[in-house]
Length: 133
Image (cartoon, rainbow, N blue to C red; front, side):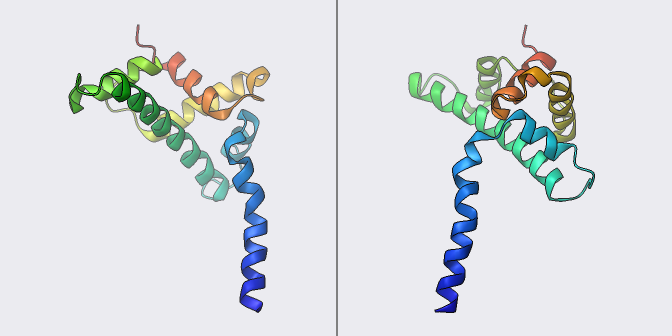
């Protein structure tokens, strides 16, 4: 009985987090990225959210391309095509830390936009820093 009660408490605690996970704003992200503890949970959230969003955006673009033209491209060209679709063309060798730095600088420099979706702001930051044309 105690185990069931504990499981219900844990589920209740996490239920709000799961519902709001899709609504992370630029303000929320910047707060986590600028936390005082450089190796704490907040910094892990910052790195994980940004890199997860980058991968998710690429996967979403790739999936859309595959649905429209499933046999047109080989696996080598998918990265270039998804970069073009997202209007973000980082040079070879860009590291995760650089991407995080770019996003944090963008969020700090654009307080008027931070109420918007963090995912959208990440894409904007990268497309401004690594334009394709």
